[in-house]
Length: 245
Image (cartoon, rainbow, N blue to C red):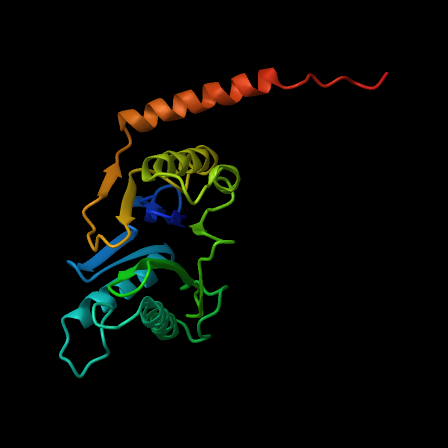
């Protein structure tokens, strides 16, 4: 399984993904699920993937290959003029891969299905964030829905719902995402560290603010312990329940 979050803030875009994939308890591996392409000073594009690993790797490989292909081939995500066109190109590529692997076509129930978050900025427009479905269609993040989750989303969602603020700093947003992932890691063994992070600041056109939280990361370990203590302390301050009669 997987857990990925793409988030839109006033300052820019924030992405975090786990790295665990498994096909049963005896087949657990680490694979990157966050990918970034950039043209310095002109565009930065980030993908996050969830679903069938062969499908997502094929999509990323095709996007990579088409960046190096002759001009008469399909345009690459480093050539299209808008983020909308980037999302459409990624959606078409996903649909192409799913169709090639399945006789039934691209359906959400397909064993070859995948879901993708794509976000970034191209010079001349604002940063944008999209969620792409297995069928290749997509939706865009808005003020009412400012972040997307894919994969094992339910355990970490309550923290995002309570803690998100579009005006928060990157530092505060990273802390919020780590708490969302911490809750998911505790509840579901199919999501695992390391965690990959990318913070993109509006108009920077740079992808140099990315790093990885390893399993023994001291900040994550401290945050996890303090979060557990804070929850228990908060429960103790709440009014006691009294049985009727």
